[in-house]
Image 1 (cartoon, one colour):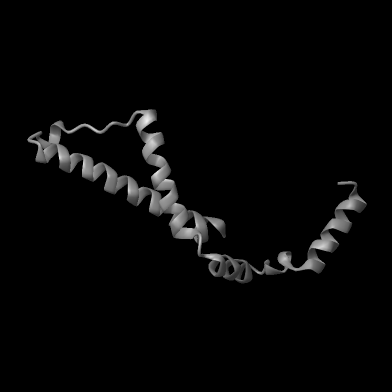
Image 2: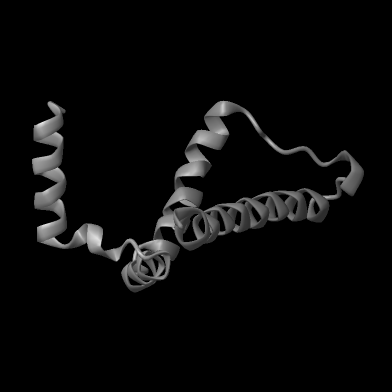
Length: 100
């Protein structure tokens, strides 16, 4: 459920931001006279770490308002009851009986 409802849109947003970032760097280099085949991207850890936080934030922005989609996913999977207080209480009692 999480793979299709949350991970896919999150990863797509991160991938999309990376593509925009890398394309803009190549465009700048081409604009300055560098042949496209000679363009270079800085893929060092330092650069990717600094840029990556923006990509991750874009992913978060994409999924942060998806609470209804998440609940719909649990409902479709038939597991929405795990959020009900009674279900959680019964699970806690069962764990206690098992010594967990």
